[in-house]
Image 1 (cartoon, one colour):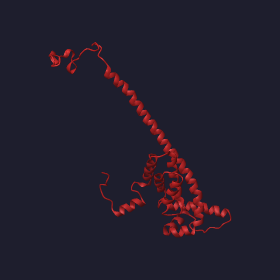
Image 2 (tube, one colour):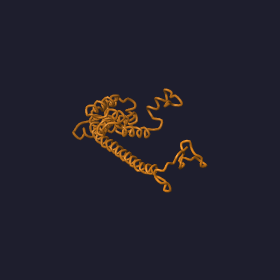
Image 3 (cartoon, rainbow, N blue to C red):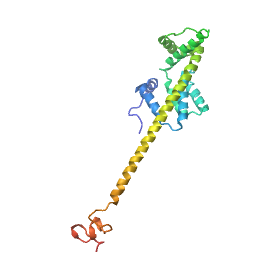
Image 4 (cartoon, rainbow, N blue to C red):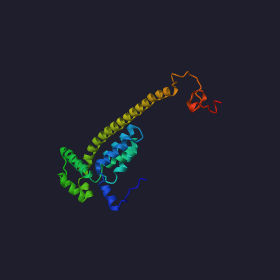
Length: 230
């Protein structure tokens, strides 16, 4: 029922992982809707999503999901929300995240009298070095990236927690109001239907036998006596 009309080739599958067919905007919108409609407490969903976003700033490529779900489990966060939130870290956003980590970490280290290697001071040069050899770049700039990811990861955690809590709580409040309004509408229509069913014609005395098919005196159409009226 939910199969594609045309089966995807391997190249199409790889392409959809690197770049979704409908774009990242549609993907992120879908993830937000899934998180808002997720079962569980608002607090646990917000905690899980916050960890999924925060770990995307760490340089541990391939371990983001594992680290995020472990931290969400230890803090009683929603594991499924953490899984969806880790999608903000992908091959297109990692270079930007790590560049921001590097710049923030280098600034903090130099402010305290330390020295940092100068590799990829600009975003284009950093992205070129990252795409050429991510492991070598992260290894050379590991310390400033770690320092920067602690700062940006903490900020992202609280920002992600606040946004997710606000989104989930707002959607649930809206849903409660919508269901309450629907119940009120149904309750308002029901008495009117009951009155119509119990209504008696004004030209007929109450309790008078209407016979078969609603004709008075047990007569059918044309004044003929019905079988029950004989």
